[in-house]
Image (cartoon, rainbow over the protein chains, first blue to last red):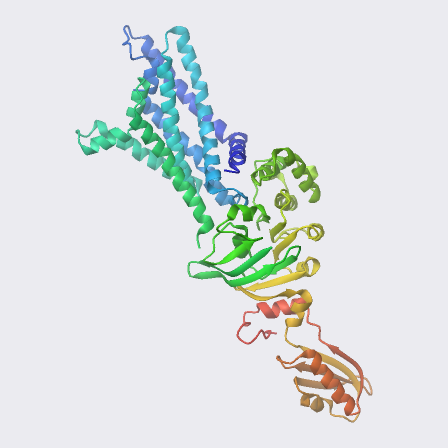
Length: 250
Length: 322
C-alpha cells in the first residue's frame, strides 16, 4: 500500500486549497442549517411529543429525503475530479509511473473524499449540542444516525470514484454518478409504491431512506451494514481494476 | 539496465510500435531519435509502465515492467513529454509529494527536494504555485521530479521541447552532468541534441527500429556515398578510368584550374567506401595521374537521419530520396 498516505495527503491539499471543498461545505451547511431550523421550529410548536420522535430522529429519519437530495449533489461533486481531471490534464502519467499500486491510488483518493465528507458533517454536531442545552438527547440515536450518514456517503463516494475512472470529463463523471444515485434513490422509494412482493423486497433492501429511518431510531440491522459495505467495496474494487487496466491493456 | 524484446504496441488497427528490440547498458546516455509520431512516446510510456504492450517484454534491471511493476518503477525516474504538474500545488509541496510517493523516507525528503531543485537550478521557485511557473521552470520541475528519488535510470521524453535556446543549452548541460551518474534514455527529434549529449542513438521510424549504434557507427551505416578527388592528369580520360574500378557507380570529371582535374564519384550502394577509394587511387596512380587530394564524403548524422526516416526508405535499403 505504499503511496496511500502520499496520495491521500495530496488529494486533501488539492481539495482544500482550491475553492471546491469550501464552496461545497458552505452550501451544504447552509442547506442543513435551514432544514434543522425548520425541524426545530416545527417541534417547538408541538404540544406533546412522542418519546421516540424528536428533532434528531426527524432530522436523520423522516426528513432524510431532504438530506438524500443534498447528498445526491454533494457526493458526486466531491468525487468527479478524482481521476477525470488527472486524465484530462495528463498528471495521471507521473502519478501512475511512480512506484504505487492502483489500489493505493484509488483508496488514497477515495479516503480523501471520505475524510472531506466527514469534515463537512462535523459542524452539524453543533445542532445536537444546541438540542442538548434545551432538552434531552439520546446519544445512542445520535451515534447510529451519524454512522448511517457516513455509511450512505461512503457508498455514494465509492460510486463516484468509480465513475471518475471511466471518463475523462468531470461533467460526465458527475452526471453518471448522479444518475446512479438517483436510480438507487428512486428504487428505494419504490417500496412505498409497490405491493409486497419481490420488487418490494429489493426496494426495501436498498432503500437508503428507510435505512436512515431505522438508524435514526437506533435500530442497527446487519443487512443494512452488509449492503453499505457492498456499496463501498464493489465500486472501489472495480475502480482499481479500471486503473490497472490502463497499465496492462495491450 | 533496459532490455526490450520484440515490443509491439497496437492502438486498434494502428501499430504504433512494431517488434522493437534493444538493450541499454548501465551508465549509457542513449538518444531515442525519430520524427514526430514515430512511436517514441509510446515506447517510453511502455518502458515507464504507464501503458501496456500488445506483445513483447520489457525488463528494467531484471524486473519485468508488467509482472513486477513496482520494483521496476522504483529504479526509474520518468519525465513525460508535456510535463504535466498539479497547478494548485507549490513546488516544494509537489516535489515532497513525489518524493513520498517514490518511497524516499520521511526524514530524507526535505534534503531530496532541495538536492533535486539545486540540481536543476530551480531553488528560487520552491514557494511558487506551479500554475504560475513559466514553461522553462515547469520543465525543470519535471526534471527535478524524475531526479528526486535518485533513481539509477532516467527516461526523459523530449526534455528540451518548447524551451528557448539558452534553456535548451542549460538542460543539455544538466543532462550531460547527470549522465555521469545515471543511465539516461531520452527521446528527441532534434539531431544536434543527440550529437551533443548521447553516446548512442536508436532511430525509430513508423514504429520500427531502423538503426542503432554509436554516432560514428550510424554515420558509417549510411551507404558508401562517394568521394571527391583532385588530380593532375592532362591526357587521361579519368572518368572512364574511374568507372572501370569496382564499386564505382558514377564518375564525373571536370577541369578546374589550368592543369587540375576534379573527379567526383558516387559509389555503388553495396560497395565498401574505404576499399573502393583505395582501388580508385591506385588505378589512377598506375595510369600516371598525380593524385593531390582524395576525400570521402562524410555523411553527417543529418544525412543518416534523413535517409533512415525518409518515407521511401525501407524497400530499397535506405536509399535517400534526395
